[in-house]
Every structure is written in structure tokens, then in C-alpha cells.
Length: 199
Ligand SMILES: C[S@@+](CC[C@H](N)C(=O)[O-])C[C@H]1O[C@@H](n2cnc3c(N)ncnc32)[C@H](O)[C@@H]1O
Image (cartoon, rainbow, N blue to C red; front, side, top):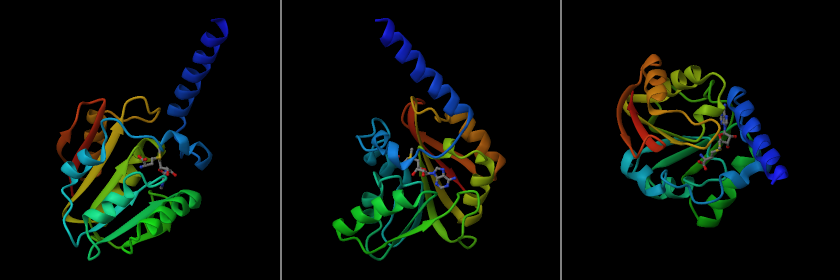
């Protein structure tokens, strides 16, 4: 019992430390993102994003590709999906799954979300699920997202309570508006939701 309490205190302390020191979930800890994502389901992402065939979409922080294969299929082979991550291992893992699925409309680029190597107005939509809170300068990343979105383009952000880097809907709305993005709606309860903002 005492050992269990010590272990629990350790887990809580680690989560609090990690929250204060945002950083990317290491590839070695990908087991956190492999299981089914409650509340922030693929169906809920689709309902919030409303992807259309032929669109160009940017997924920042795909991790091991939990949403990537579906995103690639929703936009059809005439569409284009860019996956963008800080860690090459995450991109390699995701692109391995993309190849297994036979998708030919997905391209990978490595880099930091605060300096996106894409042109202005390049995308119809951008998706970040369980990513924004890992970025130390979130406003810089959101400004970059606003820059690469075409006028009227959508940003969809997914957040799940329990993730040490969880962002509440209110905080997301404030940070988005500071970066020139208009908060449109939330899909799901505050503790597990997708939010849609517009450029
Ligand atoms: C917790 S995982 C989420 C993975 C996936 N979106 C999901 O929900 O299953 C966060 C991902 O964001 C990436 N990431 C974190 N900070 C980043 C940054 N500044 N720029 C680009 N990617 C970043 C990490 O490398 C990791 O792949």
C-alpha cells in the first residue's frame, strides 16, 4: 500500500513537472498514443473537420499515425496530406503505416511547428491532436498555422484531459484569438473535445 502511494505520488509529480516543462512525447513513449483515444475519436474528428475530397491538409504531430490513415482516405487520392513532426522516428513510423495501407497522397516533413516550412495560404485545413500543449511557444505555433491556412481555412485541435499537456477550451480560444484565429465551435465535452477555429 505504501509503495503504491509512493508510486502514485511519483506519477503525479512527473505529470506536474512535464506540464510546467512542455516538450515532445518521446518516440520511446509512443505507447501513450497507440491505444484507442476516448472522446477524441476519429469519427468526432471527421465531424468537426468536415474534410472534402481534393483538399490539402496539414497534420502537425501525427505521432504514430492514429488519425493519419483516415485523414488520407477522407480527402481521396486527389487530395494531399502533409504530416509534420519534430521527431523523424514518428514520421517514419507513420509513413510505414501509410505505405502498408497503400496511400499515395501523404508526404512527411520534419521540423518545428513554430517555423513551418510551407507557403502562406497553402492549406485548406490544419489538424493538431494532443500536440499544442507540448509546444513551449504555443502562440508562435498558432501564428504559423494562421499563416499557412488559406482565408477561411479551418484549424481543428483535439485535447483530452489526463494528458499532462491538456489545454482547456477557454485557453485554446484565447490563444487562438491572440493569433488571429476565430473560435467557431467545440465538439465533445470540455474534458475530451475537438475544437474548430477559422483563419
Ligand atoms: C502526444 S503525440 C500525439 C500524436 C497524435 N496526434 C495522436 O493524437 O495520437 C504529440 C506529437 O507531437 C509532436 N510534436 C511535439 N512538439 C512538436 C513541435 N514543436 N513541432 C512538431 N511536432 C511536435 C511529437 O513529436 C509527437 O509526435
